[in-house]
Amino acid sequence: MGLFSSASQTAMATTLPAPKTMQTVFDETVETTERNRIMRLSEFFAAPLSTFDGGGTDLLAWFDAHFPPVKNIGAGPLPGASRGFWSSKSAYSKWREVVRRRIRSTLGLIDAKKALRDRIDGWTPFLALLEDLSKNRGPVHPATFGAIRTFSDRARAAGIDPLDLTSDVVPTFLDKMPEHARHASVLALKALNRHRVFPQIAAFLPVDFDTTYLIPTAQTPVPESVRKMITDMVETARYDKGTYDDVSESSSENFNAKTADTYCAAMVALARAAQDTGVVDLATLNCLDTLFETHVRIPAIRHLIYLSETDDGISLRTAADYVRIIAQIGKANGLKTKKWLKNLKKNQHLQEGHAAGEKMSPKSRDFCEKLIHNPADVRTFLRQHVLYQERTKDILATDKTLTITQLRNARRLATCAAFSALEIRGAGLRKGSALAAQCSGVEQNFLRKTIGENKIFELRIAQKDMKGEYVELPPIHIRDDKYCGYDVLDWYLKTARPLFDFANPDFCQEQQCAQATHLFVSEKSAQPLSGSMLHKWLTRSSAEIGLPMYPHNFRHGFATLLLARSWSNRGRAAAYLGCSVGVLDTYYGWIDKRQKLEEVQDLLAKALIGK
Image (cartoon, rainbow, N blue to C red; front, side, top):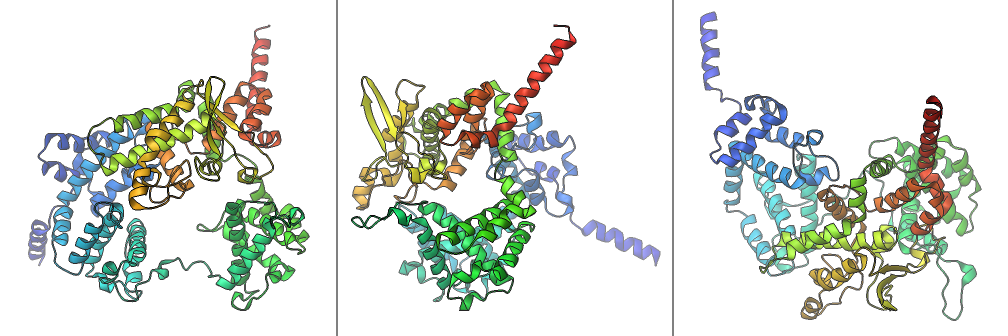
């Protein structure tokens, strides 16, 4: 029996396929350059390629875990950054693309994908239609078509046709996907939902196709009736009744529309907390006064603090902000909110959250400390508007039609150049104030002027567009004699801004649509560029010039450079940033402490040598 058992095991060993390793990938690669790139893995880990088998499970997942795409890395360091293993993010990205493609080829994934796309099924005519509608500036954006086609690969593999995309089938299908694939699939489904207004697209989808079920159900739904009452309450608080003018029938604003959205979110959080704790039934609520009563206040605040302790909840800082906002809105509507404010001052958890909002975040402080200790970074920081412009000009220096990728990169870099010029040569604005700038139209606040022999751009920021709205900036001038700020903005208006369809007069005339009036324009409409897109673009562009940063780092960087020179520059820094000296003391006091410590160390050193 032992003999047969041994023979059986030997036979099984000979029939089981050998596991795929990076050595297998290398052996199946013919092209020399690609083989060299695969061999870099061995150099990276200082180990033979045959030892990398993905843990015996998934070689591709192993590779992605160790070498994520650049967009996931963001402004962070590349793998092996401490060793300077990659010359740039571009070089890393190209290497990753080649090696990943060779891994997919060895695992048979490329052939499997081709076979899947060659299949004739319900997706075949649908994808052909979407591809046709994505050409020649059609109603379907090429990137949207690509996302839907990728989703169709997953659906085909699961045997799901477009007509099967119902609320009974899709959730189970999504639950089986990895998180990144599920997120991308949800975006593709929402895109289909937006485009079903076109009859030819709707014809391929279920009659009752609707993606509302894709909205996360973890949060308690708030009825529209309650949301309407919240909006009305916030609107009441938004305007100062004491300034009402019966001629214009208007009052001055206490806060702007964007701030109103944040205040509404705080009130919605209160409503959810009241429902989740069982003290209020939102379905029968007909007056929001109940939400401010003691029997609601105590459990609601406890629930907000509890949410700050969960992985997917709000932060403690947000919980404290919500309590403050709720008290402010209630008081403006004639309700008693003293006990809400007392909780904010006395509760140790809310005190901790409030304190977190009164100091610089660890990420921002790390950026500032590195900046003041590296002269090369300071030079890059102060001339990055020119660096972005040069990269844009390199892309545009061709007599060929720009590819979609080149066009998007040019738009991204040009926007970062203009935004940086505004920040560096104008004033340290918050991104919301900068994105509100309009270079044409009835609300134009970005103007071209001449003062004597000098040309300037002038930006006027309304007080309502300033954070806190208690500090008003004087007109901001970007002069033509100071370090290319005027030149970059002039170039942006004349050359780069027309690269955006809705800022291009010819495109708008051809499409018979309104032309964008904002200085910074969305790629897809005449609306202003969103803050999230600016954040994404600047994060990527700044990493490309070797100084990873976020839009808000401009403000922190300017203040740090001024105060590091001398703590007596607080007045200048406050004027430049449009904030109070007290705010600077709170956020940047660590610089003064560091300077004092260094002064003491110098004095002690002198005492040691007898001077």
